[in-house]
Length: 152
Image (cartoon, rainbow, N blue to C red; front, side):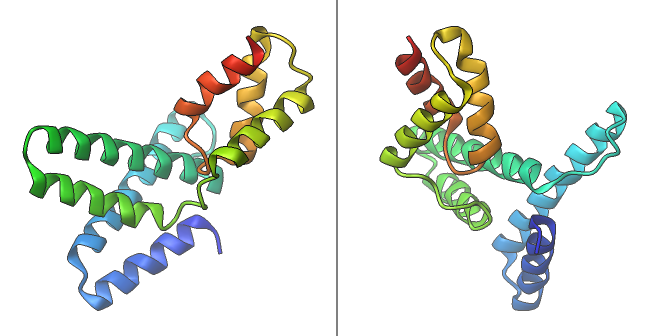
């Protein structure tokens, strides 16, 4: 079952169970995917979004929710922070398991070896290799500096 089917099935289940918060979040996921498809149609790529792209969209959505929750907590708006955290949990159900710190370091080492990276100039190729294999399993914002340290 591909990602779109999993999301559609979860949406139907949420409707049947009358889980309003979950249903709302699943609709947000579908809207984000449709927005991406519309954007792709304009570029002539056929307008179809694959699983890798869906994982990237979901990862971005989780990150947005976490940042919003942090901002709401700092502003003393705990009820809004809880809502954002709840949405992030629903979205995370569709993401693969996040790699541990040790697994991330191991993946970086393998990617460096695979592309034959020897200097900071090869960072783009290393990041491309990691994104191709580990989309949705690691935070690339945190991985970038780690790759830079290893290559620098």
